[in-house]
Amino acid sequence: MSWLYLILAGVFEIGWPLGLKLSQSSDNKYLWILFAVASMGLSGYFLFNAQKVIPIGTAYAVWTGIGAVGTFIVGIVLFGDASSIARVLAVMLIVIGLIGLKLAH
Image (tube, rainbow, N blue to C red; front, side, top):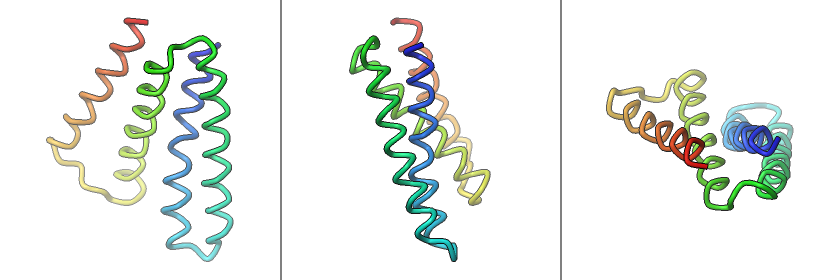
């Protein structure tokens, strides 16, 4: 269950930069800021629960890794961010590191 909490924490970690980005170009600025703040809170809540079992270093690395990779993908898909081979390979290294942390746990 702790790993599920950690994955949920990582998914909500994607929500806050997304909410802040959408607040910059939306008529519903404060709604998106509220979305970002709610995402932060939920991300922290699930990280708190995951760390009851998963070591802090592993949990933090996986949490931030999911957030970084997820936000990278959202940036490409929703906002047209650059997707060069070098950038994609760099993100793949993060994914390999996350898999390694899970397997080593």
